[in-house]
Length: 395
Ligand SMILES: *[C@@H]1O[C@H](CO)[C@@H](O)[C@H](O)[C@H]1NC(C)=O
Image (cartoon, rainbow, N blue to C red; front, side, top):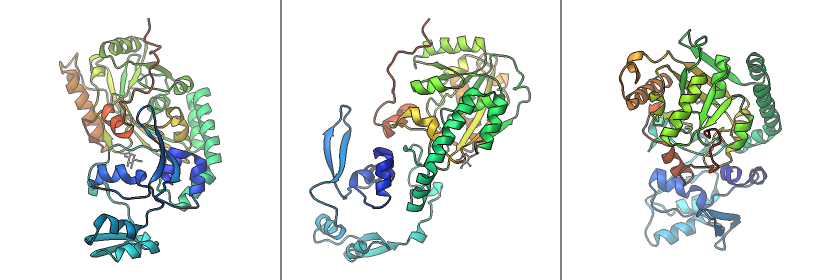
């Protein structure tokens, strides 16, 4: 169901809502990477060709070997030996047959399947991809399909309200349509301070700077790396593209800061789980007027981020949620003693200090993982999505 939706199409997911199957490719990576499983046996799918970048394409048809019959697969794999432990589902008659071959057998009931608490995970789950933010049980999936037409309408309504209307009205209409935007400011002066403040945000979705701007009710400039063209065009605030070349980016940001307030997300990429990625330290060299901002989001149905999917749909998916929620907590300005210029700290010290501070406020764990780690794991590339020349850094 999940893969049909993520990798296929909405139509395919709808067809699948009526049937069920688990091909090996769907679970292989998870079981091997995450649970350290040695071998996975499952139904094989017909594979057409290898894509240019080494990707596999599957037709969705079951290969000539047919569906896996569990007790036969167990016999083939183990031969004369008996498997030590078997786990089956109480609702599948097929499972009782293969369980009878195992030395020890367990049957899982639907009622037993509680969510595992995060601290019991065998490995920390930092990165994952895909759009669905709920467990796609048949009932929940049906609810999603019923919601889709309303969700799509709401997403465009919320989008245009955000782009076209002044902050106060946009905020009101947004709230009425179910968007919750909780803002807290610890620094009463932040609202009125003149230009040139550098806001340093945790990065949950590409809408972070937009919601921050709405909370502050003033226009900000956001620096971005690989924003899709469409997001750039529809963004209600000014965006400036960076190149990931330190010197050039530093100059660009310096120039923007001279003109007004700037938002940076030094993690460089979004993370959905309660972890903060490593903060790139470049921002710390540019200004002593730094205001850390703790951003958190909650979604019930769709994730507004993707590593391997269509990034231009990110804001739409986020806004399609029945109750997308943003919480923006603007902390006090960084004390002078903790800055590069006034406090003589290194940019790395400043970046790490802010990462720890924001991690503390949000209860998120700080990691030294980077954008590269995320894309290598989720998309098998280094995350350079757009190779067109950066437009706004030209002189
Ligand atoms: C942040 O959002 C997550 C996901 O919705 C939620 O579980 C968590 O409690 C939130 N944390 C804070 C500090 O707001």
